[in-house]
Length: 496
Image (cartoon, rainbow, N blue to C red; front, side, top):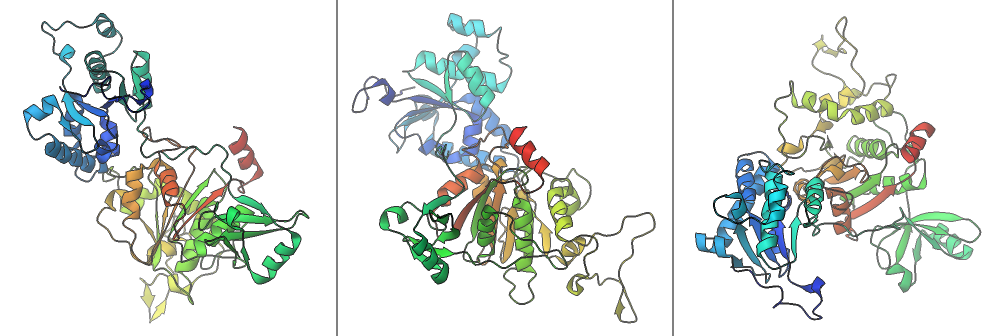
């Protein structure tokens, strides 16, 4: 391999930190972002042969996002490395760096003289495992190519093992949102009592250029006077603030009225009810009202008899990650998804209690006698239908499986994507690019609760999307911090 020497290509300043680095890429980095090959500037990229083997086993996942990304990587590598010579010696990239594939000669046996420290690892690491073989390949690169060598992986455990054996390792940082240790859910702007009174009467207020330039479009703020009076507002750009105009309450057909219980919920409801906002991201811990408010505002607008904005509501969540099959579970699509969508059924139970009045447009029409409708009665021994099931039967509320969303065009629907923090940025992009004109999508979740081992609080799709779309005229972001489920739930979320 002919890889550029670090000592001969130091950048201005000549410090060690500015030297050309050699990055060894793990399989999960390529699956996370197939185009990462062009995002390492003028550094050297090395792909272990074990990574190609793993990609080969994944590429046959036809309906899987991982399978698609593996095939994209294969096509890119075929274009960049057209023959065996370029594969072995490496090629120059347009970014100024190089790309090559490495075979760890220490793993081939024979007369290769393995360094003592690598021999010692044989008793520590099981080299039958792909992860350990990739670590060994990175150590081979570290021994034979100019330093510094860094293993890039999304797997935290692989990072830890690599560091334990003396190898620098880090996460793929290109799509990570910047750290915001002092981020607040909204800004508080102090004005005089006279300015506040004028804003209350006129509904609009112009900030001075210094403060206005610090605000994003559609950012929510709280105007406050020294006398303790406050009015919530939204920034519409160019330093112009406007009052929130909200209905007294919203409700599902035949349901109970739902009112925002705190200031942050008022911000969230304002964004949910504004049809000029097509994308909403919302952070919130358990019990802050993310699911309940998004559901009731969606149904309220889709079922309105006078001002119907959407043809229906689509609900999904990535507990089954994008691409994984659900065909092995019994039943229809709704029955397969039921266990993971139970939070929404719980929300619908709250919105439309069992004693809710009947709504004619959602009555079941399958049984008729003498031209008159009759309600379906539950069979003996079976539970009665819940009121919200009429929303599902009528098609007003639909269950969406993310693994089948590629290629779709979702028009005039209010799409709610729960647990969006479990998705990668690429998966979030896949979902959002399905949204057609006249639709709205709401991404909700808690960045502090992540089960996906390949994303974290800064690299997950929810945070990435919020960060990249911030300031766009059709996007809004809200953070909910106050729990409203119960005092017990709030204490548990904060203390346990």
